[in-house]
Length: 374
Image 1: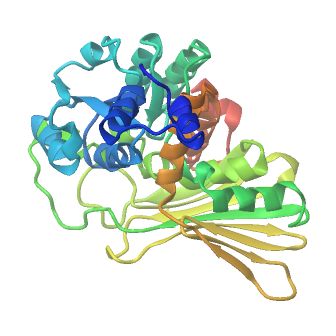
Image 2: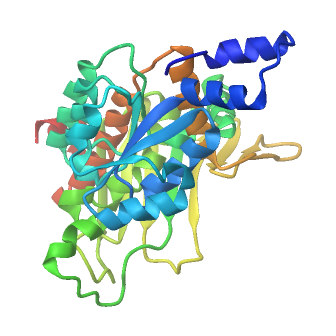
């Protein structure tokens, strides 16, 4: 980030010091956060579009092992037309002109790519979760401990950046819901192929989300969002879990397609997860509920709803797609020089997902300590 700073440009404008349009655009471009994308699949493109639309970021480099994904990214994000394309992510990370990296690769590669980005001393926005298994998450956690404290590190648990989720968390934290008795997370949506799919074995990596060793199963790759919220609101991770799950109609891969897990948190607080990927494409029920002695609170990407037991139910709608809030917060912290490292809570939420998966496999109650020792 070179040249006149964004703060200086804004201060000049406020003081009535006008910049000619061409000069203003040049100042904005030279002070923007330069971003390299590691992984340009569908989620990477979604995040990349939001970075490009912010105006304070310039995507200058692209990496993917599939060339067609890079071309799709250039089409989806016209400003990347001249971005450098790399065949080796390590070469991208070695470029000193890149300030930050957006990592959106298959889950099992997150520890490797995160570790390399930490060593390259980049600001990091990496998609959730932290890894597909205990060993991978421990590797990422160790890298996070060694990270440069001047670098901002964020995971794609975007609910934490939503104003509505933050208001809901405050309601719980300040005791307005009374004593928190029980939490529940629904993650009901489609996604599991239920008709035979005959992909060649060499295409397995393209369809990594269907395979447990690559994705961690859908409780890790998908349901970690809801479990992250339960941990956040409980201000703790669970002590143990018990659950069941399996396959009814999934026709490709080895992941489950339905599950139910009960987690026990400190103080006897229970958190339940119910999830499936078997619904029709248009059906979706993804939300969390918190039951207290003074009411019930429901959270969702598009609203929060608070029933206080009397009077009208309070419902507040989200103002926009909450990933915009996450990207905006990331750039705010980078530009303001106020870094945070959110890897520790991200690893805790990923471990929570893995604990649930292992409890289902073991068909018995499993403790947090057993999970970590595995």
